[in-house]
Length: 359
Ligand code: NAD
Ligand code: DAU
Image (cartoon, rainbow, N blue to C red):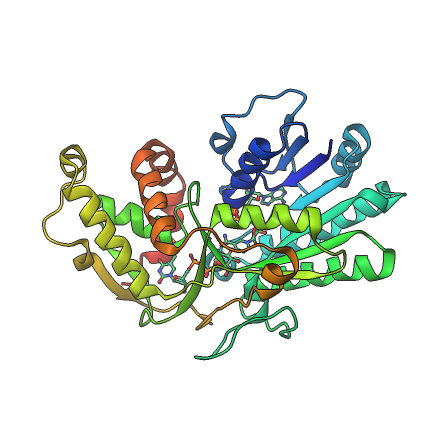
């Protein structure tokens, strides 16, 4: 029975991971530590009841006293670190929180593990990171685990710093750490500021679909459940001190992706009378697409070579984009309360700031 500390477990990927692990390993104890920033949402975890298998703690990964108490009282033997500021556009508007959580927070968490794991034999510290640390690709090539780091946004730079700290703690102190670098995720519970949920929600509501620049930037999309399974695999079989790239082998240009989302929503709604009454719209939602001022320093292309995960650990994505995006669109259609509560709150201030002068 493991005692797993999941930091950032009320966010998008963290909550998907907690629900996945709860279903797969009923006897493990999962302790979620989350600051509940704008991106953290306890509703994501409402199906879990506190008890021997699960505990939620509201708190900051920068709080070393809180961390020491949790390691000691709970006997934490596994850490999965999702806690982060995660949105590139917000890092451009205000980078400080990214340094505080992603750099200093990861440092504080590493220190807590180092201090409290005097016999690190059966312990694991898995740091969840991103492909953005590698910078931007041209038309050809892929990011491998040996691609040099070249972060371009404050977000990417803060994640790169945290990755370097994790590496140093393994080499210097023997902390049993491993890092995963994943491509763009999508799926249930993703905060509406990110491309896919933003486009789904705006398309349902008949609002404009703002595509940055020329819409030709490429991302490699992975359904979130495949990412959760990859993290589970690395936790149990990954080699300590290693890094593992995780990706969907699914490159898409942003404009193609938004067109695809529009086609599926048009098709779904025209086949369902009650939905077409709830979200009335004439013509195709593709007509809502408009190009807006580009993101400063916008990385052109990301593409992950995940052959190390495939060959060494036998993991591969199970969802192709067509099945994953249909599941995702259905989830947003079936859970309007979840996103309406978010989009009617302080998110509107962010939206006005981010998109107000772009058009
Ligand atoms: P998210 O923004 O949805 O969730 C982040 C969570 O961390 C939130 O619940 C938030 O409340 C919590 N948090 C923030 N600061 C904290 C602090 N100081 N202490 C404790 N909790 C704090 O992010 P996400 O998209 O789920 O990403 C999770 C992790 O995966 C991040 O580390 C991100 O860099 C990485 N990642 C994300 C993607 C992606 O496509 N979303 C891809 C690769 C890697
Ligand atoms: O690659 C992994 C990264 O993917 C993660 O580390 C980040 O946490 C996650 O946010 C994501 O970063 P991106 O910047 O790639 O994701 P985002 O959803 O913000 O944007 C995806 C692409 O779509 C990007 O090229 C910018 C573009 N875009 C985004 C928004 C929000 C638009 O064209 N319009 C938009 O309104």
